[in-house]
Image 1: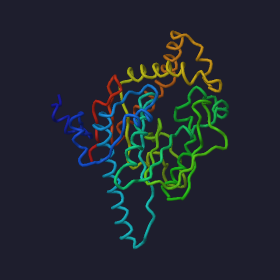
Image 2 (image 1 turned 30 degrees about the vertical axis):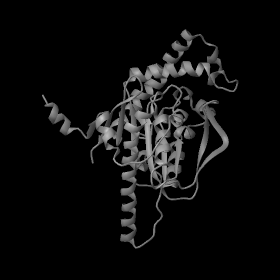
Image 3 (image 1 turned 120 degrees about the vertical axis):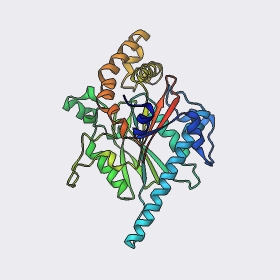
Image 4 (image 1 turned 180 degrees about the horizontal axis):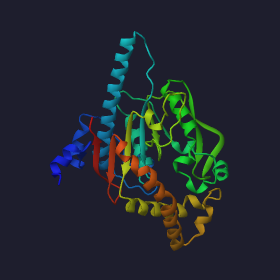
Length: 319
């Protein structure tokens, strides 16, 4: 039997509880209000300012240190090559299951990173914009696999990331509407050389579906990430959060006449729980188990959440 201390030494991650991690804030000087946090958190996510200060302030400081090191490496490279190369955006990836709170994490990080002393320009995009349109998903017979790796136009996503990392002045992202549950034709988000790009998505750490892209070996989305975060929790809790969110949406967004899920607004509470449970078990939970969860140990940082949505522990990959 392996001794617990030996197992800890063998682990590729360092573990920090709330007190230990909050001490890593250092001399970071930023501030955020309760109102700003409320404006960026997801529908049923619960997060207070003290949690942001204890967990997200140190994360922002850590990313800032990584960015600073990246800038120095870039300068050293330019000196070696005797050229003045263009610094390309630093890409932070945020991933995890549906309903685990990765959108809240992404938006809080954007808010804090923009307030770092260097005042970097930070853009946030989600991989939802790279889903195939519903018409194409229906033609492929995979409409019920929306969110699975094969439902994304990986080539388009990698082309976008290639443009960003090549230092091109403009890259575009298709617009996805959660209300209409589809890509909006001829609508795009412009990404114009930010200092930091946060990309949020379910499958960004996977290596099962690469694109040759003119290279000897396949290229993967994760190849473009400078830093990655996995938001994690036991599946039984994520399932509860998904059902809870579905019930809230039933009373809010689903009521909109333009909503793709308008029919669900008329369900009774019991019917809504039954349908959302089935959606989780047959689609989102299946995708989590088969694809997303397996990528957790490729992340630089893992945020482990408790049943109340609060972060309980941080795992940081050793260098």
